[in-house]
Image (cartoon, rainbow, N blue to C red; front, top):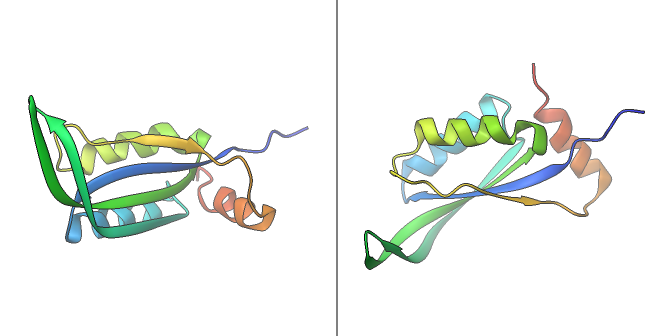
Amino acid sequence: MTEIAKVLIVLTTCPNGEVGVQLSRTLVEERLAACVNCLAGMVSTYIWEGAVQTDQETLLLIKTTEERFEAVKRRIGELHPYELPEVVAIPVCAGTEKYLEWVRDNVKSP
């Protein structure tokens, strides 16, 4: 019996502007993600180098599978302008089976 790939939502933030759009497009074109949502205009508050920072950012919601996660993580690291980009994966515990299958079909390794 073939094991069904687990679908993940990977989160990363990036500066507002073209960075998120270009990163999203690359991940989809390289079939590392089936879909990426860019949510611009988010305000992030965080600690960096010992000081509280607040910045406008774009949140990317990246739909992929567990088997492609390492490649997604590596590609974000290669393309991302931040010294320490956020890369957090959340497993999808339920969803419409047709949508989840669409994600799986569109991120299969070539």
